[in-house]
Amino acid sequence: RTALEAVDLGVRYRGGWALRDCSFRVPAGRVCALVGPNGAGKSTLLSLAAGLRKPSAGRLSVLGGAPGGADVRPRVAYVAQDNPLYPHFTVAETLRLGRELNPGSWDQAAAERFVHEGGAGGGVRPGARVDSLSGGQRRRVALAFALAKRPELLLLDEPMSDLDPLVRHEMMAALMAQAAEHATTVVIASHVIAELEGACDYLLLIADGRVRLAGEVEDLLSAH
Ligand code: ADP
Ligand code: ADP
Image 1: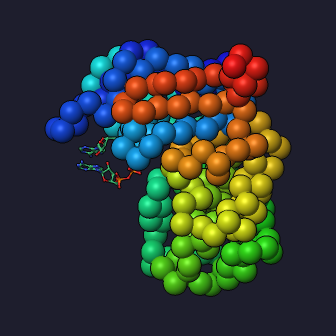
Image 2: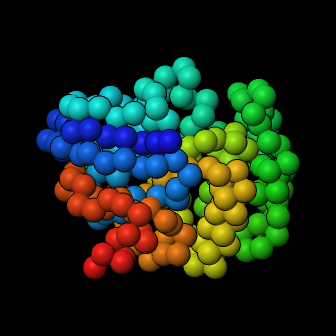
């Protein structure tokens, strides 16, 4: 099965092409690192996969269907880089909303586990307003919100940026554990390759809007 498949995919903004002639396939069940320098086109690709933007050229299929389509959208969770959530909601209200938006699939226990379980950056109180949380705590709530939806595909845009290394390591480990438990395909964009080392088994490297390298990490390492 295929999580993402791009064929000659292109996206043009006013300023020019942000993605160009991109063809690649990410098999289902992988944890895929989407790496490349700032401005490479990572966010553009994720927003396309989330169905928030349309290609200017070529095509992208997500879980075998159209990104954002009625049969695909409920199976995909996307955490944008500046995950705003709902600043005036409390943590508990945020999770309640998630449950209402995702009837049937919402895993409240998983959400609470991810938000509240100890460790650095933990200790988020259910009654705390989202806009009173630290960046790391807010990120934790946003990731919990996405995970609790039990998506088949989880799209994360720089999820660990601005976090101190200890928190980053713990959140990454918790995220990977939950993804593995449910065989969730994860695509994680980052401009810091080291952040993803050891966590990913698939690599998509883009630079200047073009795919430079794509494949199983194992194959890429043994071939060179
Ligand atoms: P990355 O996430 O890898 O940093 P982006 O996808 O954000 O890259 O951006 C790719 C290129 O497209 C950059 O040159 C960026 O300035 C440009 N870009 C991104 N979003 C827009 C937009 N909404 N309008 C115009 N240009 C944009
Ligand atoms: P990233 O590089 O990680 O994608 P940015 O700070 O470039 O983050 O982008 C933040 C927001 O600004 C995004 O919504 C993106 O689409 C938009 N954006 C980025 N570059 C441009 C641009 N050149 N013109 C207009 N909007 C842009």
